[in-house]
Picture 1 (cartoon, rainbow, N blue to C red):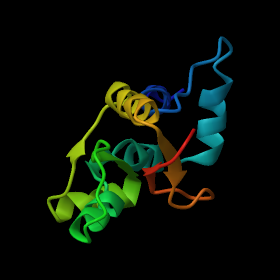
Picture 2: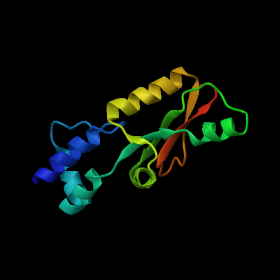
Picture 3: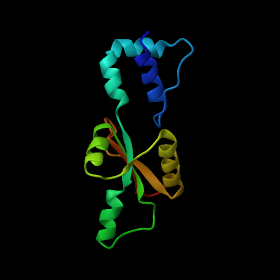
Length: 129
């Protein structure tokens, strides 16, 4: 089994949703069927960032701001690259992302994926959980 698939599994497990290894290692065999070694290497380069909430920034500019946390929009993959190119946000680890999500929930914000089918970001909107 190529080492790249073991590193890929570890990479996935470090993401917010996690991807724990199985005793049998079946996930490594699945990865071999789904990804070439090169594709697995590319996937490990995908990013996760946190950025200021554009929704709350926009509302504040219009005089309707709130005192909720602002640096809590999570951006993934291609969206993270776009944000990086524009100097918006900062990289986060899985632990930081989970902390940000928990703080947002504690502040009364509702997790709102931009697109639940293929989400590139997760925003926290005002509202009850």
